[in-house]
Image (cartoon, rainbow, N blue to C red):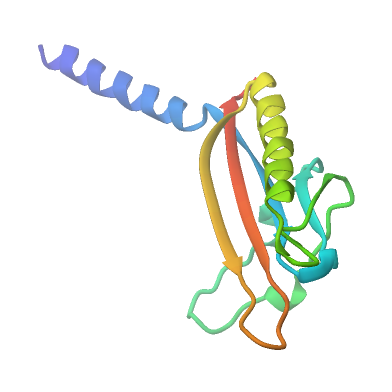
Length: 150
C-alpha cells in the first residue's frame, strides 16, 4: 500500500511539473491614442523576435549592489505593427474609430486563435488627459495568449 501511495505521489508531482511547462505565451499590445485632432499614433504591436530575458537580468545579494549598469538593453528589430485609429477626432470622441479599432483587434485575436492560441489574461491601463493644456494620453491593453508547446 505504501509503495502504491508513493508511486501515486511521484506520478502526481511529475504530471503537475510537466503541466507547468506545457504552454508557450505571446503578448500582443494595443496602444490607442487619446490625443485630440488625430495627432496621436495608435497601434497593435506584436513581437516576432525571440529574446532571452536571462541575458538582461542580474541579481542583488544585499539589496543595494547591482550589475544592471553593465547590462546593455536591446530593442527587438522584428515586430508586427497594425495601425489603429485614434479615439479623438477634431470634435471629441469618435465612436466610429473605436468600433473600427474593435474590429481590427477582434481580427487579430481570431487569427491568433486560429494558430492555436487562447487568451490567458488581459491587462489594461490608461494615462489620460490631465486637464487644460495637457492634451496627451494613451490607452494601453496587453493581451496575453497561451498555447500548448509544439
